[in-house]
Image (tube, rainbow over all chains, first blue to last red):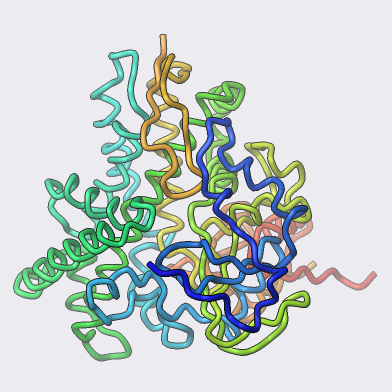
Amino acid sequence: MQQAPIPAHVPPNLVHSIARYQTPSTEADPYLITSDVHERLPRVFFTTDWSPLYPKGAWVVTRYEDIRNVYQTDELYSTKDAANFHALVGETFPMIPLAIDPPEHGKYRILLNPWFSPKAIKELEAKITAITNDLIDQFADKGEADAAYDYGRIYPVLVFLDLMGFPRDKLEEFLTWEYAILHSFGDVEKVRFGIGSAIKYLRGFIEETKRNPANNLTSHIVHGQVEGRPLTEDEIIGMVTFLWLGGLDTVAATTSLMFRRLALEPHLQTQLRENPALIPSAIEEFMRVQPLVNSIRHVIKDHEIHGAQVKTDDKIICFNVAGNFDAAEFERPREVVLDRSPNRHFTLSGGPHRCLGSHLARRELGIALEQFLKRIPPFRYKPGADQKAYPGLIAAPRVPLVWD
Amino acid sequence: MRIRIVPGKCSGHARCAAIAPDVYKLTDDGFNEMPETLVPPELEALARRGARACPERAIEILDAEA
């Protein structure tokens, strides 16, 4: 896509590249690259190389406190046009609930919250435990496994397929489409292929669900109501597509990075093996040090942030890959402290759009970690393996591990 | 010591209840809609930790006047 000119109101001295912060490394902490953000860059700056999907560029806030303000101030920041991949194939429905602002937003969350509440997720624990153990069964006595390809890539998707009512045999195809959308480094043709294929499938699945109601989340949406009336066609496809997009990749990426970190920093494995009660707070800490989403918002009112004049229709990014390591909020920010408290990170976003899947993600990660540590001895990277990882959603596609 | 939830701020992270389930009771949907509540002395330390855990800063600690 063509790079648009920098908006006239943006001072040239505030324009900076963030490309370096998207580069992979073989460090134990693939986010180490963001260590210089707070020193090197202005507190609020403008970037034009965020993504080919945002050619006009965006403001960037990198301090925890400034990020929190963006999440919490919906009078200034809208989620209009969020996750707008489908615009590339000529679709105009909004991704629901993400692209809807309060107060409308809350009405959609009311429909979905009961399926993702801490209480509802508790009901899924037996299933998550069974799914993770079935996968571990495949490699437990082999002395090696790929924590990403054989485990992390699969278990969250199986849980999610069941929740939504999708057939399990769609796993590989769904992953192919998902990767085309989110892992193709902005290659627009690949994104088109992915989102076009997904929407076509989902429309067919929705039609089938209209004819055959079932006890799954898709049916709950298709046959559901908002404010006492049925959802429109656009609302249904918008909600189902967004859930499809959100549910497949993030937990897998977190899992792969987590096991990679445990392989490279064995003292963390030891701590967890000696005290499995640490697992819930450990999951929180892994989430903090491995943020996958830097949220983008649409400015709806001219205002100033620390001297920067931000205008209506500008975009602004919450740069969690720096904010989650802000020493003003987190002591020893680059250290993985498994019992860190408080741990008020924004990996799962903040404000009204706080990730709907938060509790499911936490529980999946907790069970996946617990079961693996229970059944597999202390593990390390397979000698000679490529240890490259990205500081974001692409994460570590392969994490080959060995154990004695 | 009393705890007060700032109206409109809770977005359902459920960190308060994760840290201090005996203090913070959530709705079925996972939100904190507690009225201003007196905390028994033996739960005060836990209540403070739970309040600090909130990314939205939605929980206010109101200490008793000396």
